[in-house]
Amino acid sequence: MPPAEPVLTDRLAFEIARLGVVGESSDVGTLHRVTELACRTVPGCAGASGVRWSIPRSPGDRPEPLASAASHPDLAEIVDRQLARGHGPMHEVVSTRRPAMSDEVLAETRWPEATADMLRRGIRCFTTTPHVKEPVLVTLSLYGVRPRALSSGGPGGQGQHALAALLVAQGSAALSNSLQYEQVHRTAVQLQEAVESRAVVDQAKGILMHALGCDADQAFAELRRISQTRHVKLTALAQRIVGDQGLR
Image (cartoon, rainbow, N blue to C red; front, top):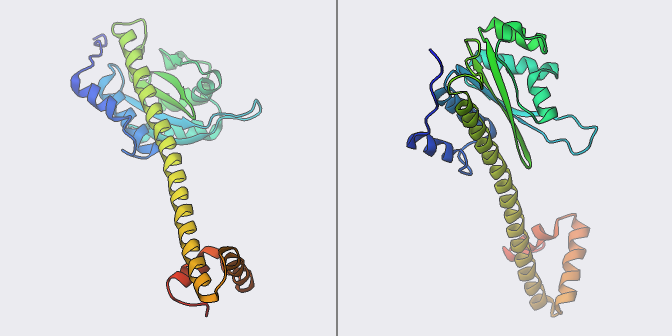
């Protein structure tokens, strides 16, 4: 039977939207959810794999795989073997930023090692789609067990590829959002720590000003002297003074 036209149901729309929720899962978790959705919703797709890649910053750099996931263990092995070799359809897609596909793996001659791995697992066709959302590059590969099951020229083909493009775009957006959230959170934590450190140093200065009868600059100079002499960080020394542990 020809592939059926994909249908974007309310449930599917909800699950695709959930991919973009920050903090829902790790990189591998997000990629795994994308592959599961592809298997369940793209007609003709018997399995899927997703890879997150580094984005080269200079012409001499090569993109490197940072995380990967697959819907089935056999596909995970195929992906791992291709990534270890450093060449194949996924690497070509990453280099060109253009999709690649084969309607009949048995007749494919471009990637002999990768297609041999696929044929041993019963895969007869595949498509690989890239998507870039700085600072994230993701590829989504779909696999079929019948020739031309994922063909864009067949019934439902355009819908298949549109849905695959939507899934990889939302998945890469989720990974990008998570990275940006982590960076913002890390900066916020550092700022909070800086504010707290400044506060405890100011309190320690006040205690020394009162104890030594000196001004703020002299109190701070004394804190620095003790810190350097005893090889104790200034903040740690201030915390000891404020905690009424003295200068012992």
